[in-house]
Amino acid sequence: MTSPKKLFIKTFGCQMNVYDSERMAEALGGEGYVETKSQEDADMILLNTCHIREKAVEKVYSDLGRLKKFKEAKPDLKIGVAGCVAQAEGGEIMRRQPLVDLVVGPQSYHRLPEMEALIQQGKRALDTDFPEEDKFEKLKARPKAPRGPTAFLTVQEGCDKFCAFCVVPYTRGAEVSRPVTRILDEARNLVERGVREITLLGQNVNAYHGAGPKGTDYTLAQLIWELDKVDGLERIRFTTSHPNDMTDELIEAHGNCAKLMPYLHLPVQSGSDHILKRMNRSHTAESYLRVIERIRAARPDIVLSGDFIVGFPEETEAHFQETLDLVEQVKYGYAYSFKYSTRPGTPAAERALVDAAEADDRLQRLQALITKHQREIQDCMIGREVSVLFEKPGRDEGQMVGKSEYLHAVHVANANAQVGDIAKVRIVDAGTNSLKGELLS
Ligand code: SAH
Ligand code: SF4
Ligand code: F3S
Image (cartoon, rainbow, N blue to C red; front, side, top):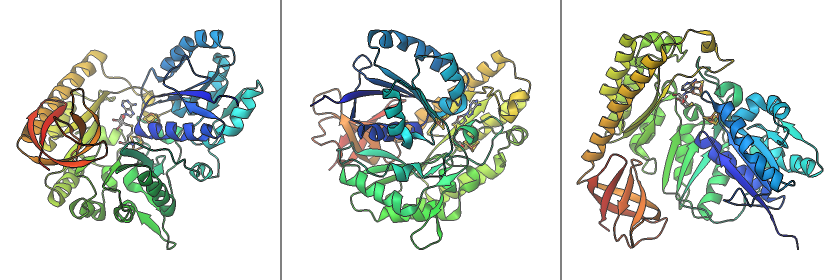
């Protein structure tokens, strides 16, 4: 019997890429590959790339350069590039980097088995189509291998919003939602394999409108209520949402659905209406704040997170102050902030840049404010009772680490629990990035 070939995948970018990497590993599993954590051991190395900010392409080339010595040591080694850089620059990568055997875009990785067969014959394979067939349907045979307690599940992909700075509509294509029954099947499969918390993924997940079992489309809220009925599934989350698609029904689910966790990532990008308009965000700071108000009315203890871009073309100090004001008003539990990065092919790419030092300075000030709030919110948790889903053993004997319903990392000493258990915990101490708790039940 031949021993299985070994696959090493390096994943960059968003959670959807994490999910895609799992599915690619499964697709190649049928071709006799098992995953390895060591590049040295690998028979195939796959870089699953992200194109969202600058230097993405340079990073891929420098990574590929590093892989040269592996290929020299093992001429049979196959090297592939997947993900959003593959989609955007696939042909160019093939031309510039002869050691690449395979390039596959995010919409065509269900064709990996055929592509693998090609490269085994010494050919090169490139597929960056947006095919008609449903890649998820082609990948339907899910294995029975046990899983950890949390999982991602892509329900919607692509984006029709075309924010002026963003490559996603080009790399992931138009918005497509998966049918409800397929998602439920996949969720049940995950639960059978040990999963207790599922995070539904989509670039615009709250715009989900997948074919329902009765012939009409379901909204994300309806999908969540269907998942609520899945026995053994204890927690539901979703990300990422657009403020304009936060419907009343979805907000109500945050109030009424016990399995839907009180945490919401709702990017706003800027607090300035002028900049939001130039970003083509199609909402204002005020309309965003009103959405937050409605969410907090439905679920007062919800923890919010967001994304921000500073130094977008035309952003002045006064515009930036409006962003700080918005952050001050919302008080995020977490937030991600980025310096604007020009993406070729996007509408904003032609515009004059804000002074780089100025943008750096704004980023620092914004991050300082966000961190201050994050710390305050973590401190507020002291004395409170939370439920923790244990994900792994901690460093100390008997310690377990997991996530609260608010997505805070919680360390519990002498937990006397298994991975996958959910326990009541009282928070006794807080740091900026994690909490300490004591077991109650
Ligand atoms: N679909 C999600 C997230 C898209 S990408 C949404 O609509 O919110 C994740 C984050 O990367 C964005 O929210 C934005 O803050 C940031 N981002 C996207 N393009 C960027 C660019 N060109 N420069 C800097 N940050 C960017
Ligand atoms: Fe990009 Fe905007 Fe679509 Fe989000 S909504 S993926 S930021 S274009
Ligand atoms: Fe990056 Fe593509 Fe995700 S560009 S953020 S990997 S959708």
